Length: 351
Ligand SMILES: [Zn+2]
Image: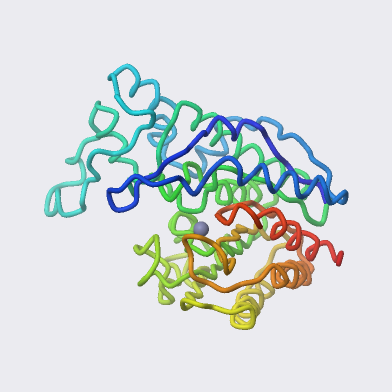
């Protein structure tokens, strides 16, 4: 299998994050992508391909131009405003109650960078550093190049995206995500082929951004297996009753799962998701692939094993559709490479 990788992710050099006001060691670190790259190259069955530049247009097809502008300028603005920290984080996040009862034109995007960050952010733990924008743009190019390989005839290809993307909504970044790589890619595929596209989100967390972006779309199906939002990030979305509205009614399937979810429980849920995708027209599935479902993941609570990732890859490939597989989360750095390798070998029908 060919996989797409860019060293530009290294410029998104994140060492710390904030959890409930406390600064801790970062989970979404550069090592994550490096260990996956090394494991795939050591395997011998994967070929590394550099991304090609796709420009800002596919991003603007999915995201608010204001978010794009903010992410492009935020770090330089923070430096000019003498931001004293090695990162930019929101000072405030406008609570929806702040402008309750007022027209939508109130609640301005301010000029000051830490205020602007809050205007666009979901949370306070998704830091912006000097190289964040370059890395986020490269992650989009990685994803779109992976789609090019598949539209060019490959049955499956893997994009080693970092930073991840599925928490980024049309006008919002958060959850270590800046641009929604999977959504941008699904939109580009839908435009290029004119056919329906399915997104299968197997990250531990619900992909609130992807759901929001395609909420009213009947031609892009979103199916997600994830930790129930009554106990886990992103809290705001991920319930089973979220099925889409308007043209998108019925094109959103959430399968929230309990703490301690085992290999067997997970495979049963996966079968439900795959059955829905099998019924959907269209030949391409974008997989948002996370390994924070792993039993040893430091911030999550499922109990999956490396062996089940091989079986998951095998079953997703057994759909008979073509797969654009994009990396999302997964924070047990020690076993991340092996887990990715197992999933992708399963998808290729290798032991
Ligand atoms: Zn996740």
